Every structure is written in C-alpha cells, then in structure tokens.
Image (cartoon, rainbow, N blue to C red; front, side, top):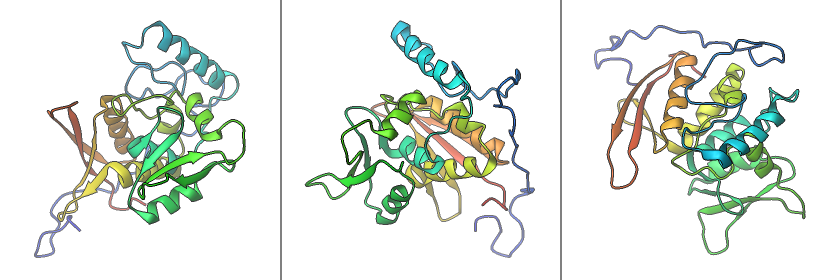
Length: 239
C-alpha cells in the first residue's frame, strides 16, 4: 500500500493522528475562530485581494446572509461540493460537470439537492447539467451563491470556511469529493491533488493537515496558469 518496503518493514513513521475537531467554533456568539488561509468576509465567503468594489459588495451581501443567525450554513452535501470544486463548471447559466465515470455521476445524483436533477447534455456522452426540473430557483445555484462560489472559475475556486471547519465526517466527505475529481494515486500509493487555484490549494492543505495528514506542495509552470500540486499523506486509519 506504499507504506511498507518489499521486505514488509515500515517505510515511514506515520503515527495515527487524531483529526482536529472544530465543533462549536462556528456557533453564534463565539468570538474566536480558527482562521483558514486566505482573506475572508464572514464564515463562508472568500474575497480575493483584487476583488474590487463589486466583488467586495457581493461578498458583503453573502456574508450578511450567513451571519444573520445562519453561520453554520452548509447548504450542499460536502461530497457534492468537493466534486464541484474539483471538476464542476460554476459559471454561465447552469452547473456543469464532465466525467466518463458512471459510478461517480451516480454518487453525485444521490447527493443532489432534492429539487434538482442531473441530466446529460444532448450529443455529449460525458457532460451533465444540474438543473431544476420545474420552473423556479435552482437550489444548487442558490447554495453556491450563498457560499460565494457561483461565478468562480478554475483559477479562483476555494473552500468556504463553514466547510473547512465542519465536523470531521463532513471534512472527510469534502476531501473525498475533491480527490475523486482532481486527485490521483500512483503505484506507490502516493496521493496527488492538482489545481490551478492558489486559494483552493491552500484550502486543501489546511483540510488535510486538520484531518491529521501531511502535505508537500510544488508549483509547476504551464502554458496557462501555474499548476499547484499537493502530495498528500493521510492518517493510516483515515476513513
């Protein structure tokens, strides 16, 4: 499994580490909260330094919604959110997702908001849209707006703070969604996560370390945006 040498001996010293439990830190009235990486406005909204007046105003509105007695808001299933942050299209008129993995799309169907459905794009066997089958507001798009994620590109995606500080099982589910889309594992058992978003890279690093794992990060220059590559080691008893 990548943890032992051919002779059976341990290759690395990897102690069983208990994940950090953030239970209670997002409760209303609590002043001190752990601070995940990046600049935030409110518990679920990330604001880039170059956001400008429009971006700051949008973040302030979303932050007000979350702070108004709703700071624990996690309106999307954490595995679904992780998958959308990995491979989802969050711009334009609808949520889009591309995969040739039938098992993966079945898992996303099971985790969609009740008033939505995944439908295959006509003429494209690997492309799907998450739509609402009846006229009205798309609950998934509304949730992404609330979290400050709707309209974010692959360069600016991030994990909302309410999910970074969620209960441990939710954080494992979030990480699973991220790794099932933008993760890979080699023959040695080394897990790699790649993203073009520096914010998402920092958030995944925080997520893994808070779950008891370790991360090594490198940045590879490409013809487009730099690729942030994270090499992960997770606790041996991780679920």
